[in-house]
Length: 76
Image (tube, rainbow, N blue to C red):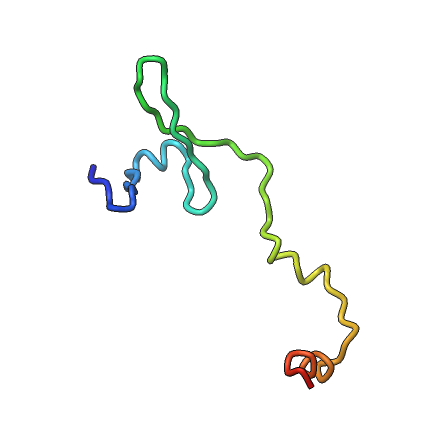
């Protein structure tokens, strides 16, 4: 397996499927045992975090009109 200049490797499909590693959903870590051998471990993350940007629309209150907002951005 070749390592890229960024230190990246491709985890073979069989390994990903066997370990249940899903793109953009699964975190992994590297662990070293007492003999110095390295292992790839899937991190079980039961609490799925939602991006703060996905929920930002729920927290805003619009009290200014579009014209007022535009005037602020243009220093009118």
